Amino acid sequence: MLEVKPGVWFIEGENGGRYPYAHSLYLRGAVNILIDTGAGSKLEALKEKTDKVLLTHYHRDHVTLNPIFSKPSFAIHKKDAPGVESIEGFYQLSGLDQVDIEAYWKMVRQSGFVNTKITNYLEDGDMIENGRITIKTLHLPGHTAGHCGFLIEEYELIFSADIDLTSFGPWYGNTTSDPDQFRESIRRLRSLNPKMLITGHSKPTSRKISEKLTAYESVLDQRDQKIVDELKIKPSTTAQLALRKIIYRRHNSQDALLFFEKSMIEKHIKSLINRGILEEAEGKYYVK
Ligand SMILES: [Zn+2]
Ligand SMILES: [Zn+2]
Image (tube, rainbow, N blue to C red; front, top):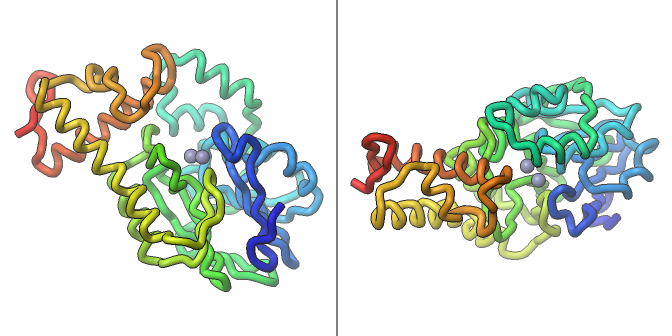
């Protein structure tokens, strides 16, 4: 654990915080607060020393160790709560109830889904005190509908979860994900001008945060452009586009990544149609 500011501890996730792990934040005070439980076995040391768990969203890499915390209260945004309250809710929010992706289901089962009892719903602007610092909830939808970050006001430090600054770029493959909302959330984060940014999958940074967020946002434009370029060459269906590895550099056609690739391409196409750039005829998309 690394104390990045007095009372604020960064807990690096196993495997460098890469999926299926994620970084956590631990806020020590009169009330000890843990943000996300996906960091791996080092969280065992905190299970008796945590009073409250705040969850940024329902994804497995952020909630894996919820079951070891029997004492604390759990909070998450209402829109993401079903994804941790039951496995059926998880499938519904993720979109995986619509398809039979055995490999993915097996992975979810292997990671040991245990229902989490949510005691509080988080809303944008909620203030949480721990006797030492003040934490403001930021609803930052797009990645999921209920995705939240947290601003520690005293230090102008934001934990932005899966607005994660990775080179892959934004991820919005679930039913309730939305790339346009994701873009708005990145812009909101940038306008808050934090002095330190910590994400679920990248290390704390205090340098060039605004530029890093701009570069991260630009991945959305690059994907739009790639889709437009492909369709200029050959009008196609979303299923055809999904095989061209526009978003994931690697996916073999059988696995869950293809499902997410197609889901994300569909969302781009919807947005490009709304912006008057594409049109559809007989299931294929054309550049206007
Ligand atoms: Zn996520
Ligand atoms: Zn994540």
